[in-house]
Every structure is written in structure tokens, then in C-alpha cells.
Image (cartoon, rainbow over all chains, first blue to last red; front, side, top):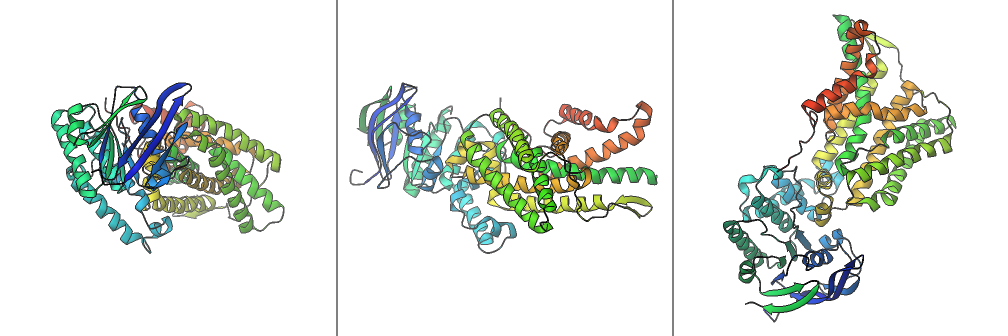
Amino acid sequence: MTGRNFLLNLEHISLSFKGVKAVTDISFGVRESEICALIGPNGAGKSSLLNIINGVYQPDKGSITFDGKTRQAMKPHHAAEQGIARTFQNIALFKGMSVLDNVLTGRNLKVKSNWIEQLFNLGRAPGDAVFQRKKAEEIIEFLSIQAWRNSIVGNLPYGLQKRVELARALAAEPTLLLLDEPMAGMNNDEKYEMSRFILDTQREFGTTIVLIEHDISVVMSLAQHVVVLDYGKKNRRRHTR
Amino acid sequence: MNFFFEVLLGGLLAGLMYSLVAIGFVLIYKASGVFNFAQGSMVLFSALTFVSLLERGIAFWFAFGITLLIMLLLAWVIERFVLRKLVNRPPITLFMATLGLSYIIEGLAQLFWGAQVHGLELGINDEPFEFLGILLSQFDLFAAAVAGTLVLLLSLLFDKTRTGIALRAVADDQLAALAVGIKLQKLWFIVWAVAGFVGLVAGLLWGARLGVQFSLSLIVLKALPVLIIGGFTSVGGAIAGGLIIGASEKLAEVFIGPYIGGGIENWFPYALAMLFLLVRPAGIFGERAIERV
């Protein structure tokens, strides 16, 4: 594992909200194709850190290097353009839309045809539509959610919604995948299944994954690299396997 | 019997005029989950701009083009300086912003073009003609054709294109939409620009009918029952809602009115809308809210 380059490097990142320190002087690197887990108690700043990587928050101090480029202030859609996809702690799916449509929105940035072509079904539009659909179907099959393809997402049970959210993130073919508590509120079987999907993602697509998880046994079985946060400070870094 | 059909058809056609206004609301509601109170002002502003240009001797289509450009500019300014700052805020904040915008736009209209009432002649004969023994208004038929064409275009635009899915995604969850790389700003500009265009068309037709005057912005209130019945999220629903309101208010006026003293037309749509709220709060075609408890 150690031979690989760092895909993501955070140096001396600090962030505070109106004087309350969320993250203080955090530095760590994530290597290509590894699974890195952020652990720590509630309020330790794990989600804030994910939001910084994703461009939702701007750090007060410190620098972030992603894919060889040290970044300036950025917006979430810039992060998406650079190949960073994510899921949210409280599922943020498009609840009124079908599973397939949700996954298709994940392919938003991969669409080649423009709206005029789509409107009249000309030029690149027909081929593009077929291609996007095919890619979406591949992801749906990969995560075994074919049976719910046309179900409205808001009607699905919680565990499945989590899986659909992962599908939407994977549809973007990300180089870096951020998972905020992908197994929160799941029973053991569901956790096992989700772990398998995360490992499969890493193996199949070589995706680098940063995840937040509380269940320490899950963390130990998944992550090659664990970063421990304690009230905004980094405590320890350990390679598990 | 002929009389009944005459009232019914007249009502249906008049209803499409309401639909035309309602469509503008649907577009913005679809993209931001907000009732755009400024839609009425946009209708007024575009009609007033158009008629003022026309009165200064500018040719019809040229004036139309210039007005359209001004509406695009307005959409850009609104997105850039108001909406962009309000991403991820609760809908009530956005609603208050549109309320403010509505008065600013009205003020601007008055500032640029004054407060007089203007007559607007679109060159369409408003003489009724007879068809199968029923009297119909040519103007109403023309308005209906325009509304139909607009709906067809808009539903193609929003159902056939990725923009359509992106729109629904944004209305559902802005943060998640940003995370999958949807450009909210561009999308908001597009819907406000299209809503401006729809407002212009509605403004011309309503302006030709009632004269271009400040009360034109009050058709916002007439669009409300249409939206409640048709659903806030469906262009087709806006048409159906308009037809139902138009037909029922005219029929009520003519057939129930004499018994309880007339003037029903003004409040009947609202009573109907309230009934709908009790029975089917999402409207006929609206997306039903799905909630897990």
C-alpha cells in the first residue's frame, strides 16, 4: 500500500464557526485506492472535515491538495467536476424521483449532448441517452437494486435508500468517494452488505474512499488507514492492514 | 342547450388565459420549491415595456425581441444578486425575496414607463363568430392556441432533456444537487428567463384584453386557485386547473348566480380551491409529498 501516491493531502486545516473550533490543525494524507476511515466521538469535526474536502465549507487555515493540485476556495460543483462524489449523513436523495432517475442525476456531469440536441433528439442526444442509461443500469446492477429501479425513492426502506445514495455517487465515476456514516441506523446484515459493496467498489473501480463510521468492528474490517479525531484535533493515525 | 355549451366553451377558453399565467409560477416552483410572488409584476413589466416600445414607433417583432432581452437581463440580475445568496435557505426566505422583488419590479416599471393605462392592439379580431350554432371569440381561440403551443414546448424541454431531471433534483434537495455537480445558478437563470418569456406572452394577451395597467399584476391572485387545483409542479396541471377554474366560474355565474345574487365569478374559484385543499392538497397532477414518519 505504501508505494502509492497521495491522492488527497490535507495540511494544517482549521475551521471554526463563530469562535467555536470545529477542526483544529488537522493534517493527513489519503493514498490512491485506499479506504481511509475517520473516527471519533460526536462533535469531533468528522463531518466538517468531509464538508471541507467536498467544498461545502472553506477552511479558515490550511491547504488541500487533490490529484496533484493545491486548491483555492471552491464550490461543491467544482468538487464534483474534479471527481469527488459523496453521500450524506442524513440521506439527501431526490425523494420524489425514481431510483433510476436518482442514479441518472449522478451522471449529470458525464452528459455530452446539450439541451437543444436533447429537446429535438438530434446529434449526440440519442446515443448519449442510451449510453447514460446503460451506465446507470451497470451501477444499479452492481449494487443489486434492480428490483427497485422504478420505485420512488421516498417509499423505500432506510437501508435501501442508503444504497441508492451510494449508487448515485458511484454513477459519477468518482476518483474520490466520501461516505458520511454509510451504515448509520443499519442492522448487522445490512452493515455486512454495505461493507461488501464498499470493498467491491474499491476493488472493482480502484476508487479512493474516505468514510466516517462509528462501528469500530466495521472500521477495522474495511479501512487500511484510520484517522482518529478528538474534539477537532487529530489524535492518532494507524494502518490497520 | 346551446347556451350551456356557449358558456362552457367561453369559460374553458378564458381559463386557458389563467393557465398561461399559472405556467410561469409552475416553472419557478419546480426549480426552487417557491411560489414566485413576482410573477405578476413580471407580466406587468414585460407588457408595459412592450407597449411603450410599440408606442415609440418600434416594429412589433423588434419590440418583442427587445422586451425579451430585457426579461433575460432581469432574470440574470435576479439570479446573480438575489437568489445566489439564498441557496439552501428555507422556502419562506425565498418567498419573502420574491415578494420584495415583485414591488421593486413594479416600481421600476412605473419609473421607466409611467403609470398611465395603455391600450394594446395585437391585430387579432375580437369579434365573436358562430361555429355549430355556438358563439366563440376569435381572440380566445388565438390565446388558447398560444397556450397550447407553449405547454407543448415547455413539456418537451422539461421532460425530454437532462435539464428537466436536474430541475426536479434541485427542487428536491439543493445541497445534494450541488454535490452531484448540478449548476444551480445556471438552472435558476434558465427557469427565471423562461418564466420571463412566459410572462411576456401572458402580458401581451392579458394586456390586449384588459389594457396594460397596474392591476395586471393582480392576476397573480387569479393564478393561485389554478395552481392549487392543478398542482404547483405540473405544467399540464396548470392547463387543467385553468380549464376547470374558467369553466366552473362562468357556469356558476350564469346558472347559480341568479339565485344568490350574482358576483359569484369573483370568489367561486377560491371556494373551489379550498375544497381541493381539503380533498387533494397536492392538486390533480402535483407530486404527492412522500414522507416516512
